[in-house]
Length: 110
Image (cartoon, rainbow, N blue to C red; front, side, top):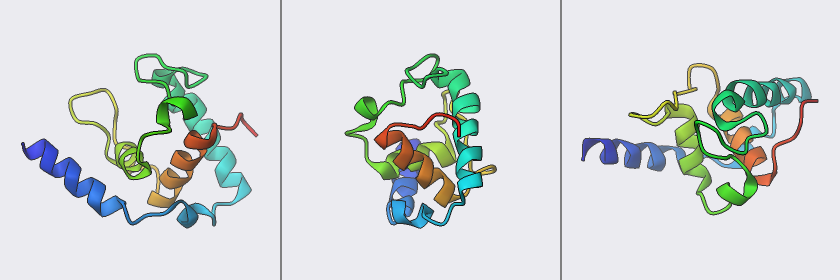
C-alpha cells in the first residue's frame, strides 16, 4: 500500500509539469538527451527503443500513457524493477522533453 501511495503522490506532484516547460532546451542539450536515451535507455529498452529487458518506448505503446506517469517513471524509477531513477542526471524539464519526444516518435541522433 505504501508503494501505491508514494506513486500517487509522485504522479500528483509531477502532473502540473507541462511539455511547454521543456521549450527552453538548447539544440545542443536536445542532442545530448537523444544520445542519452538511445545509448543508456536503449541498453534496456532496445537500441531502436522497440523493447528488450524493458518495454518498448514507441509512440504506439506510449500513446495511452499519461505524460505525468511517464515523467514520474523517468525521474523516480520503478522500485522492484531494473528501471533506475534519473532525477540525479535530468531536470524535470529535460525529462518532460524526453516524454514528449517519445510520444511523438523519438528522433535519431543529431
